[in-house]
Every structure is written in C-alpha cells, then in structure tokens.
Length: 115
Image (cartoon, rainbow, N blue to C red):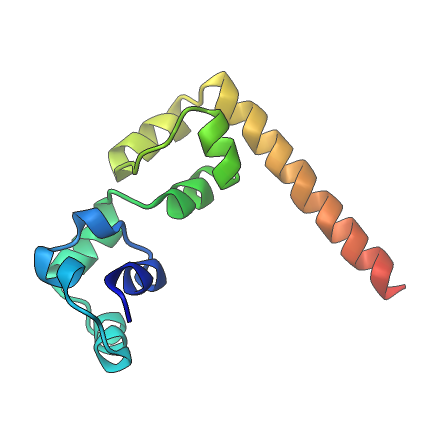
C-alpha cells in the first residue's frame, strides 16, 4: 500500500515519518508488524506528534471542519494540543459545543430509527 495509506492506518502524520517509510510501499505484513511491535520512531510520533488533523480533531473534541474554521490547518504537536486544551480559545469552545450538538443529534436520530 502507499505510505500515505499506511500512515493513515497508523494514525501518524506522514511528513514526520522517516524517509524510508515515506518513500517505500508498505505491505500488509509490514503494517501489521508496525502495529504489533512499533519501532521507537513510531512510538515517539504517536506520543508527541506532530499529529494529522483527524487525530488533532479527536484530541480536541471537534470536527476536522471545526479545526479549519478555527484556523488550524497544519499538524500539531502534543504540546500545542495541550496548550489549546489548557487555555481554549473562543473558537475551540464554540466548535466543541457544535460538535457535541451534532453528535447528540446523530444519536437522537439513530435512536428514533430503532423505535
């Protein structure tokens, strides 16, 4: 598979991965080996980032679109995410509320469909 696909499956930001990973196709067996026994570079990326936008959005409790509306268009490190969580700007507070409302509405519609 393409490195970009493998990076997405591993939840890492591809440009931060080692060059060998970024430039070589990854087999399913190699991907499984990375999952089961991750090398130090992978452990470090998962711990400290930079993280891809979908991971940043999940950590902040917002949608990816909410990140863009808030002006976050690049990968963030764990320290940067931590700063946003510790002292959330107005856009983050607003986007978290919007995201919670959307999730609650989806759940309500799902529950209604079962009745």
